[in-house]
Image (tube, helix red, strand yellow):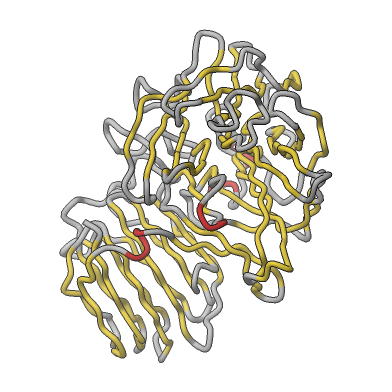
Length: 473
């Protein structure tokens, strides 16, 4: 699996469609896989929803519940679900097409009038569609897609999902070469204030796709991160998006790509999933018969940080609140050298609130072997003010030369304190700092026996206001 597609909520179920090869673990035969969940934790895989054929593969896109039956595919009493996807033809041309379901997404029919948007382009893809409502005169469907090589987001509108007309374009912007993929556009209140709403445009940048690889001599240190997801904060008037400033990262790790959000999520929440891999090594990961995974679901909010709105993310649902509290301590001081915890686990959540004392660096080490030679370390360097995830000794790192890495991001302490939430799964570490202001997601491939956890304090003492380990097995 790779890109999440068609994220939508209906009748108590979260629907996750995704790029999928039904025939093997490598990237080929692109179709839409399908899984559903009542709570974003327990998922049930369903048969392939939309399959490719001899003429076209099924690339990324989105899905909506057509509540007003504008498309005419359903009825007023049984609104259809409509998928808007990229059809990649054998000639290389990419167009936007429709499929619809009137039985709750159990079966899908391709629209006979496909394609619905054709720019005669070989790099026009990844449509995200949503219902825009700004009063009686401004109610229609909006599509954001990309001209990938041009690093442009192209916007369209429609009254019925079948006939589309262009609105505007955005880009290129930012300091990355390569291509843009998988856009998303949505409103969020700033600091929870409904009277102050900004729009967020998400784009994934990809200098190392399956199809497009940069020349080796043209790879800058930033491009060596491979694929990633960034966002712009700005305004959208129903036709044109205007950015307030340069893009920022949704996640600073190596393994967060193609992040998009659910349509119609409950209580107006904006919930994002990303593909947890990187095209620099996605086809070499040592996972055997399967390959690819999604990140944990994250609720997105806009919070004022350093005087401007910034996207913050925290894991949502039972993964954030459930599990079994295995270890909990408050008000302890960790001396030079740190301490091993009396817990061994493979899947768990660590919550830690550190207060700096005299240590030069402090943090948490997870998936640690008994002798400490294998480990993934999450550490804060006091002198540089940076939080890092070091996976250079995390286990199997030899399958790709660009996999061993240390990912770092500047994270200011707040009154001398650092708040960390670390989610550890069998092959992943997802770190959230300062209540979600910063995130780092990395794959790791440790030995199954590497289950130790430690708290680190180098060069002095560190105080822990609270430390909790919650196992998720």
